[in-house]
Image (cartoon, rainbow, N blue to C red; front, side, top):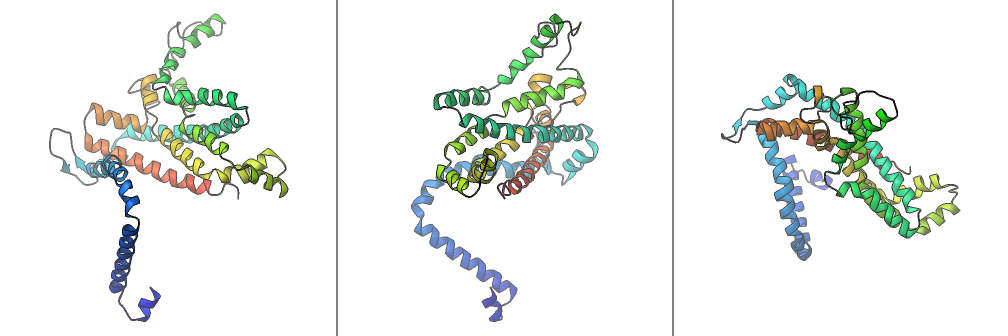
Length: 319
């Protein structure tokens, strides 16, 4: 570009020249590696159709009034203004979502990492059994429904039954309807369910660690397992840690099915109402798809920004 300036080209000519050079370079790369790109084409088409295109369409609908029955009508930023200025329930949902995310995200992520580290130190057969036990909740579907039995509001609920038999309480506690208990129970269930794909990726990262790096670290002055974890193991596991962070952020910001199954929709005084619950309310109950798309866009942007911040923090691991 400095050479173009020396030749006296205008800014528009420089940009045009840069674009043309980029296109020629891309064309040469495509011709050289056309076989690889050809095999990637089916994945790209599926990814574009089922990921990128729905996001773009949802963003467009967020600027419209659309109730499925009528043609979408462009209304500008009205949905967003209503969302942040007039929708008090949405602001409660934002508060609840961020409280849940701040607690369940980091705790679930660190718990997955530490459990994977401890389990990796076990003998082979024992390790395989423990991995299965810890990973089972994430592949068991609506397994969190078992918590509705534990915290049932009648005397037949396991928690109430034990407390009554021990004499701690006289009457059953409405665990899933009392606003004092609902949020802690949802947080507990969410953390329990967070030992999923992130945990499995951490186990794979520990298994793939090069033993020679540990030996070299010991020679360079690594004196205990914590130093080994921070300066050798975790920096070698950055791809797995990034994947685990993405999964943790996704699960933390999309808490909704748990709250609906445990506390209903809407929950008592909206005590555990989340952004995803608000999205489900407007999208699947009221069918106000434009407004629901605005909620989905806000949730998507919050997850995107948080993901970038987490990646910046993870790059500092081992430094």
